[in-house]
Length: 379
Image (cartoon, rainbow, N blue to C red; front, side, top):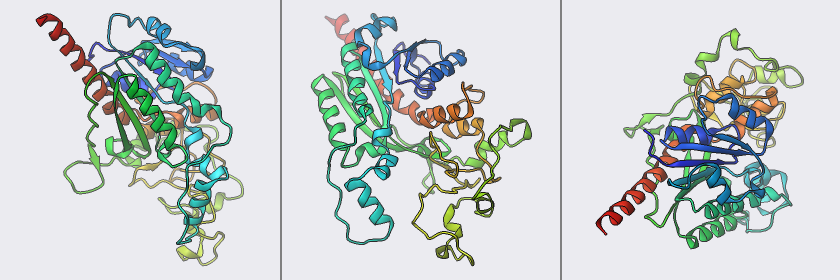
């Protein structure tokens, strides 16, 4: 049920947060995205997205103008968005020099005494400042609430100071905030994808963090959703995609990796009689294969040729399968080449994970507006 709250989706990408905001009862009126192909995806799904698609760079926009573009002058507004996460991702830790990278490598190699990482600078990547642009738009628009999604590694020592500074600025601007860390499996997504959500409401009580609905424990919650359950509809040959076949140097190795395993199946550690690899010397997702009985691992936006997860049928995942693992609605269309479709899906926020995060902010905003109306009426 719509709550009568307008929503602007910044850094909209393929529309994961837009889908979630609409499912949570928000009236999504504006999608802002700089990537041409992603904008085409938003337009392809007009049944899901009734709002205007604005192809523009957030850095050159003003929040007041966006509120006018969204026709939200007379209604409450919530801004949602997932600023680009690449500067804060685990991949950045592994590809850069620095304490975090050294710490992770040493721990993976079994060194027991490794100094914990200190906070320090990043390599040059201006995208890390886009979280500031997100809050700038929110405050300029005088939005009644906001939801910012990003990678959990934003909590790491090298990135946490930026997040803490952002929270302080939000509070100085009058927002009560709640920081949530969640795994997508806890909310019915067939993917072990950790994300953080910063929830904010203007001048009201801080939003309540949503309660998980799914668990892999015997605790009364619904069981986690498995990859086998969401991929079953796409198993037929009619879903075949060019580029899903596996060939090349490690094709035979992948075929003999058991479901749920990675390259370690070919190590002495795993008991292989003729090991090819040594455990802990490759990225964990090298030759990584899904198990139909478990949730998927995180879907990457830019996988290498031997980076999983691969299907247990020894092929690359089809884009409708990737979308299903992310929790997009069945039939959701993605524009572009296979590489562009994979990138959009991998960069998206899983809609079922974002729905309860956005819903709790919408509820708080509605309660705030009702309280204001009641106060005005009694006065």
